[in-house]
Length: 109
Image (cartoon, rainbow, N blue to C red; front, top):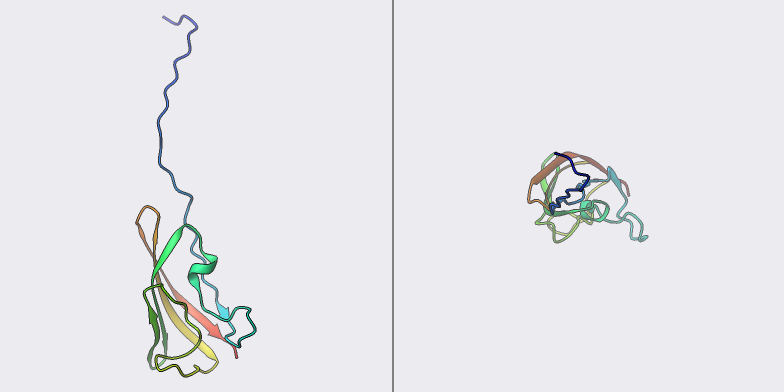
């Protein structure tokens, strides 16, 4: 029977904001302080980048565990030429789900 009393129940739900994985498609490592790094962590939110690999036609030019961003130099520290490069970026969202993105980035000098 309904006697007019309200029944309420509360449940605590742990919900995190949706992870946003944003990867720029151009960068300009020219030292002007704007867009100098290929930094997927910077513009993404609610996730932690755990791996970045950048390749050119010959092979790997950069790799990190997310602790540093690509500055446009190769593994020996030499400036990479302008052009298109390919990346694989892996990240974890706050629920520890692995997210992965691949694509190309244009380096402009």
